[in-house]
Length: 226
Length: 382
Image (cartoon, rainbow over all chains, first blue to last red; front, side, top):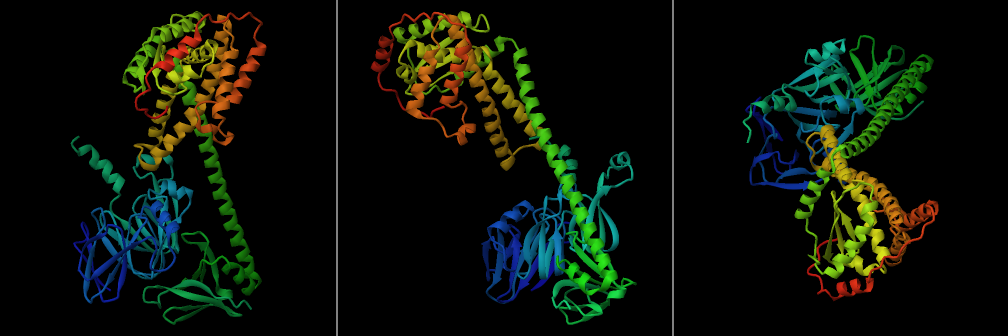
């Protein structure tokens, strides 16, 4: 499978080119356009093995859909254009292990990658600014992640701090904890940062420039009432 | 020697991406990791620096002193296997890491438990606070508010039957109400009874004094005392302002749910409705018991034999049976047997009095009701 990411970073779409017999699994609703030689199959089961109803339900809690769309090329050189629901960026990551992805940022992946949901603890569920469950991608292959706004990556080796709600994905070799942005509680909240996610360990971390709820809060008052 | 293989990975600058998945196993002197690309990395036990972390919190990282090589594994058995193979010094570090990991888990579980308990306590206090607060607010309002709400409600309701205007029926019922009214707990309530032609064995009271009695109930009552028992019960709902309490409590639960969950939709809204059905209905069972007790007091004070109410419940029990006890929480009314027992207990405590029979031609009332044309299309029972 070849890919090209177009129109980065504000309204990115991924153009995937599949040879005959190649497959890709996408988030439901991600397809924008496709060649006629592609067939779509919708199931709750991932091609990488496992899955079924239980994992479909877990994905709902992680902010993803119960179903997955599998696209298979029946002819050579078939193109598939996919994009996220919100305007933002797309990044390709060659997965070789496990990646923990925030709900709604998983866009598509190769069929050797299993898509599951994982629980990161009660504190993170409440205060990380993300979904209560996260999407856990395990395997080897292509992984496409989407973000709200621009996406950037950091190779963490030691510690790194990200504001809550700005995490896109991180490798499972990284650990994160919720802590105050400032040593004092008053300073933390008066400074507007409140709580932050402190990563430690070694691995790749993807962050997004914007946070949908914050953007909504800023935009909402400017909209004319209906 | 431990011959197990573990799935994990390696961090090293020698790898193209800096990281690769690997199979990990133990030799007598070192941890060995063989990557998918075929590269082999060796980390001697005496150079191994251990740490736990990762997204799961239980991933084990084994590093060399200059941190140029890290072998990691999340398998729960890995640390124990390493303790067996790595010698005394490494075994002590492994045990300390495991202890710290268990302590951390215990700490997290304790916080979770405290949060859950605090949430339950807050919910219970919030629930009883709303119930008591709503009740207190209702009893501060003048009865004129009940009358306005009751009048608006009866106008907008589908009573599921035609009103009965046969004077034999309506006057007889009004006579029973007139005998009970002077003994109601709140003076000057204007009770307005409306008889509706429908086969429901039911009657209900609205705030302010509107009472609806279905002809199905009149047909089931074998004596005017039995109907007087039901009317006293419904009049008690009015004087004890139970309808208003339920409106205020239901509003309180809705407002509290919206404050906590914001704009409720989907599952949260469904959960709120279930909460309202189970909690507000459960409270309504208490109201029914209160109305039974107050009704019996009124009957006793008016000189009408309260056994009429007991006899009526016995008839209902014979005909309908009781809900299984496991289902009573969804019902608005307590089961018949419990109500009969409670009334008998109350009667045993009341002073002896000579009850005066209601001097009414009950058979004529029932006959008039039976002669009415069959009711039109029946809606659902409520």
